Length: 328
Ligand code: ACO
Image (cartoon, rainbow, N blue to C red; front, side, top):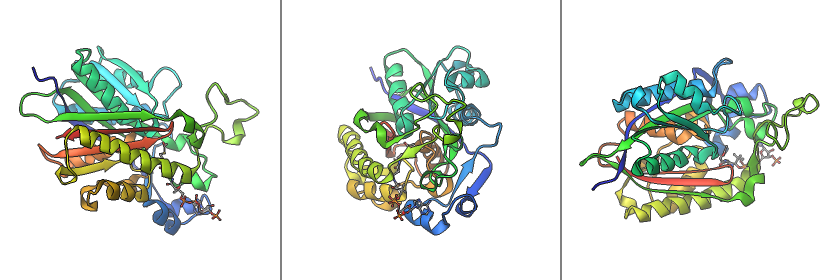
């Protein structure tokens, strides 16, 4: 009997406030030319003061649920991928469960940085295949503006806030499916990209509160090299497992961190640029939310249609990487 899993609906939400590169140049010593030429980013969204990661996640989730045609009370699994949870505990997924009224859902977070949404996809897929879930909601959501050092020009220009979501369920005959997934981790590189403070290793205290330790720190050039290598390998893994050739791929949705990384990946996968989805000029790097938002935009702007083969690939702190090949 067919035991495949499909994406039944997608949704996304971006906060209203737009912060342009020119706005940033009034905060730190930077300019639009440097940011755009090095990253491809023009602007990003910033959550309002009382708007938390769970609020962004809830709005994206509600749209995905509506798009799927499945009732919220029939969702039995909620996974939120985030590195910027509302609180260290409980999980942001618990707030989302209450907000959307999915009372019978088991809800938890995963922390895999920019790869988190695809990690969540793999976990949910396996749980559905194994019978532990029928209708799963996966969300990538971040309020990175709360964990950025706004005096550090090397990082604060890169990140933004947002959320994206998808509802997964068993695939019926004639529907698309998640064909192959790949996830991986290299814990030897934890020092290259992290939020050093705010956890048990370095709790925020009255003494260190002003040092900006609960903020993203990154060795940009090192991360860049790992990102290209790992994303290429992970994408190729799912392409091979799915039995695809470059010409079969209708759209590659890569993590939205840097357009130079995206170009390098497209080149190595031999997929032309017009079949590579890019929206980071509008949103910057939204970590776990990036691929989820991009998938929803591609879905609702007609960039992908039933039967198309799509490859998604991500890379983030950990280091983590992940890819998925999908028939839409
Ligand atoms: N404005 C102006 N100048 C700047 C800025 C800025 N915002 N930031 C840095 N500079 C300066 C530096 O001080 C340096 O000056 P110097 O030569 O006088 O020392 C110069 O620009 C070059 O800096 P580099 O760091 O070498 O710039 P690079 O070309 O490597 O670009 C970047 C930096 C954009 C961060 C790039 O390395 C990158 O994208 N790395 C990968 C990021 C990524 O993929 N992250 C993964 C996921 S994120 C996650 O998991 C949460």
